[in-house]
Image (cartoon, rainbow over all chains, first blue to last red; front, side):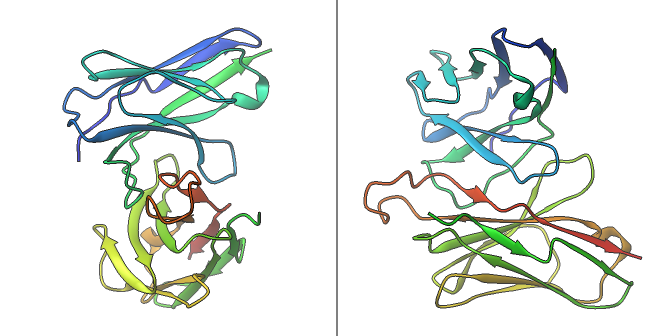
Length: 111
Length: 119
């Protein structure tokens, strides 16, 4: 499986935008980019996914580089409830067969 | 829509014992995946069941086994427990792409997990 690289931790102030980066230089043409997050004491939660084009949903936006070797998850206005570990995961052809989690980025939101 | 549920919430066992963890998948989902999450690490894939058959397995020994039932609920069994089996065990349900009538099908929905402690 292609590997992703994320910073171990990031901090943000409440109500400010947050940009969480992910590098995936060995991504293949059929790999979807998924983001999940895990709040304290909970199971992971789907955030967003995309293939080539930028994507928006009610939770976040996903910006994908033109060469697809990196992507950025954007939380437009961070809240305290967004404090979580954010995982960037590559999944072949959109299959939910197996998610390979790395260690993710621990996001701290400061009041 | 009922979400993924897991039982029990917490469990304490001793080394060498056997344990069974249970998962009820989200309504309409026919695929269940199990993950092990050690403290401070990301979840690691154990195996997946699709329509009662094992459909992929991670790097876990045979003492980790599973079942899926006709209602798509699932069990994870671990024999001969070891101290390193202490972890959060997560269940996730999904539907293969194209099988759920247009719903978002490339997403796994996780339960809250079972915290297993092996003493």
